[in-house]
Length: 243
Image (cartoon, rainbow, N blue to C red; front, top):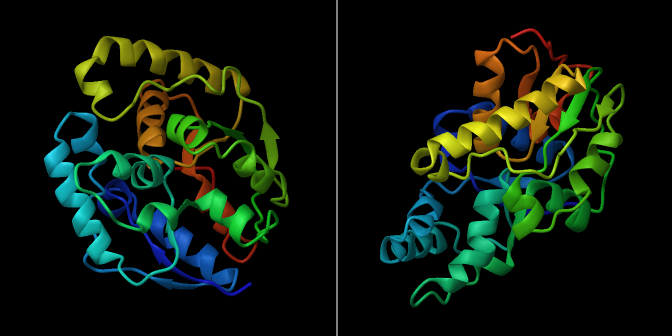
């Protein structure tokens, strides 16, 4: 199925994790999509919205609408950014855009729009999946990421104890409530360690950054890797679990 899509880069992927964007691009093109990357895109405004700066968030939402004008489908490798556009934009003062109805988190787009679960990936490693709060609770992606992962050849998917518990990041929550966030992170890191896997995956770079930091400080062994990077992996492009 050939679909023309606009790729929402997200702040974290654009500035810290460009590999996530490259993997998303490779994956979408491998599945026959034509991918645009609007150069005028900036922050979706989630940080501003969550900390009470609604006017500033509304300005960013308007800029977002202008950047993606004319695109019928917007895909984001982030449940939190997709959730911001699809749900929170509607709560902004004066917002009357059309993007909320056109924006999809990556796993939603693959399963619901393209109608695929087997994306031709090969990843011979042990993996556990953390369902991020925005993807799980705001977007309701349910088991879509796991259905995609189960179709990856060579993978050994291991259940994560307490998977649906928050990792403690929550954007500015981790800064404003550092002690609580650290305790939540410790629980999540213990669960990842107990799974004994090589790789922890999720659909949000923010949560992977948070949990990955906890894993590295303990030299826990498991490496964080975005869902898109696993789904883009093939036998022709082998990936090593060694950092």
